[in-house]
Image (tube, rainbow, N blue to C red; front, top):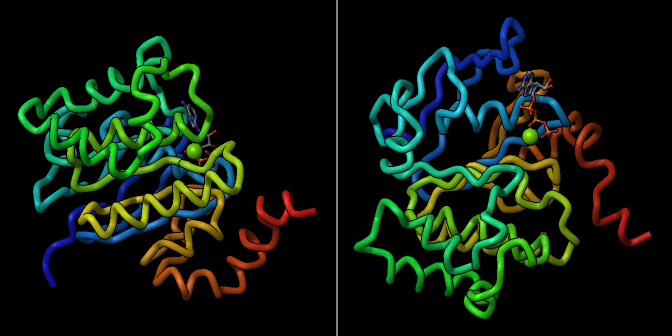
Length: 243
Ligand SMILES: Nc1ncnc2c1ncn2[C@@H]1O[C@H](COP(=O)(O)OP(=O)(O)OP(=O)(O)O)[C@@H](O)[C@H]1O
Ligand SMILES: [Mg+2]
């Protein structure tokens, strides 16, 4: 088997003396969707932030067979790693098009092609290209955050809670697009509290509790695991909205 695109090995991340991520190992292959599910405070965001270089870590992180643990964020991004953060972090007083343009800052030559690709995935962003980002709906803002990350043509897109605060129908749209990314050859590392939706589109899954992975395997197996069903799949947003 060829080396995984992302290989995280025995990683620890601490805030001061408190370890929020403990001895975590994970890998993501080419054109693979891998999800991390876990409760609030499990350490999911902390792990993604450490992989992209916002937080320092102990242990090793390799991307495309290169050790990236000591690189700064920009160098990790230019290698093809990208993070769409939980808060989306758009420039609210700039237009949709300007926000997308910023995502291409490293890759000016490929910008036209990137715009076409992002517009094909998110026709809504094309329709609304002159609208200010701050006036978009929550779902459109999530699409813009993903679109901006894709403008840099990443090999691996890390998504932190893309469904947060969105209505079930919009969540379905977003998940459909994530599946399309896989078909287009982009790998995805997906962090989600909506475990049901995440496990449906993922190839493999890791379950995180109190900073550690307690379980991992094919997404189908994880979705059928009794502990996972009891802790994460018993009650979902979809059920709540159907009442
Ligand atoms: N800047 C910080 N300083 C100190 N502790 C922090 C900081 N950020 C997060 N933590 C703590 O680290 C732990 C993991 O937090 P993290 O945000 O990674 O969890 P999460 O799994 O992403 O949760 P959620 O699903 O709510 O987003 C929590 O106990 C949290 O309180
Ligand atoms: Mg989080």
